[in-house]
Image (tube, rainbow, N blue to C red; front, side, top):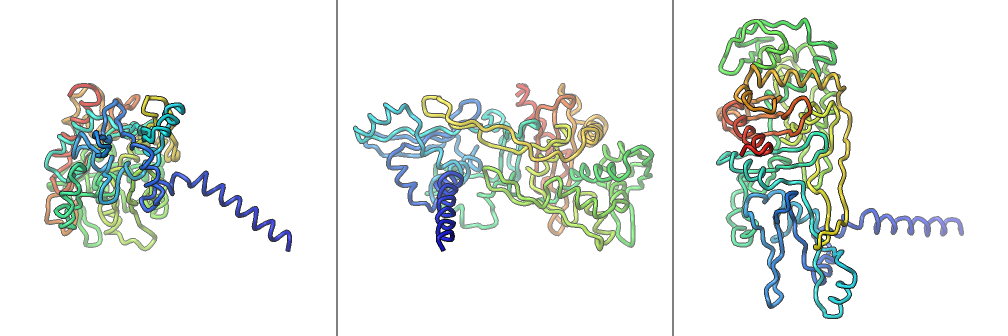
Length: 459
C-alpha cells in the first residue's frame, strides 16, 4: 500500500511538472483561461512586427490609461495577425502568452511595480515581409483566393494573403455584417484552411509516382488527340487542344490531361496512396496558425475513371495552398520538406532577444535525384509550356500551372500556380490560388510573377 501511495505521489509531481513546463504556454494562451486577465492587468500587450521591422499590431495607451489595440495595415495582415475582439484569432491568439509576458529590465519592472504602473510586453517578430505581402495582396486584386510565399530551405513564411479579408480595427462595428453571411468565408484563412482540387499542379505528385515506379522517364511516349476514353469515361485536354506526339517532359510542360490520365491508369494504387501520404496529404500540419487537412484517397477498388481524375488533380483530392507549396518546397530543397513557420522569435520591447525559432525538417520526402528530375520537368513548364510568360525573368523559375474544375463544373476553373525561383539554388516558393478565375496561365501566373519580382526588388 505504501508503494502505491508513493507511486501516486510521484505521478502527481510528474503531471504538475508536465503541466507547468510543457503545457504552460498552451493553457495560458487559451482564450478561455481567466489568468489572461491577470496578465493584462500587469502588462501592456506587446506588438507584432514584420521581419523587416514594420509594426503590424500595437497597443496605444491614452493619458487616462485606456488601451486600444491598433492594426496599422487594416486588412492586409488580418488572417495572419488576427484580431483581439469578439474573441481572438491568428497570432494574437496563438502568441497571446508571449505578448503578455514582459522581459523588460528587472529594475524597470520593479520600479513599475512600486509605481503601480504596467510593464511593457514582449514583441513577437514574424517571418512576414511587409513589402511582399502588400504586392501579393494587390496582385490578387478582387479575386477570392490566397497567396503563399516561403523559403524552401528554412520554411520561413514571407507572404500569407487570403481574400476576402476584414479590418481588425473595426471588428466590433463590422461583426454583425461579417457574420451575417456564412458562405462568405471572410474569416477563413484560405492559404492554410482552404481545401481545393489542386488540378494540374498535382501532376507533380503523379510524375513522382511514375518516376518511382519506373525508375526513369525515358521511353515514355504518348500521342495526344485532345481527349482519351477508357471504359466509357472521357478526359479532355484543356480547350480540347491536340498536343500530338509527346515524351514525358513535353506532356508535363503542356499539362496534357490525356497523357497524365493514362499515366494514372498505369500506377500501382497502393504505392500512389503511400506516396501522397508521405507528402503530408491526409496529415494535419502542426503550425502556429490553424490549418486544414489535405485529403487523398485511392485503394485497390478505385475504378479507372476515378484514377484518371485523380492523376490530374481532380476526383476526391483536396489540397490547401500551403500543402501544394510544401510539395514544391521539397522539390526545390533537394527532397527535404521543411516545417513552415510564421514567427522568427520574441524580443523585449527594448530589442533584447527573448527567444528565437529555428528551421525544422518535417521529412525527406523524395531523393535528391527525384527532386532534380521534377525540377527539370517544372523548368520545362516555364521554358516551353503553360507558364512561358515567366521565361523572360532573370531568376530561372520552375513551376506548374493548374486549372481545377470544382462544384458542379459550371463555373470557371480555379486558377493555380506553384513554383520556385533561381532553380539552381532556389530562393523562394510561391503558391497562388484564385477561385473560379479561369486558367492558371491567365490569372495565377501573373500574380506569382509580381511576388517573385517583389522578392528580387523589381517591384
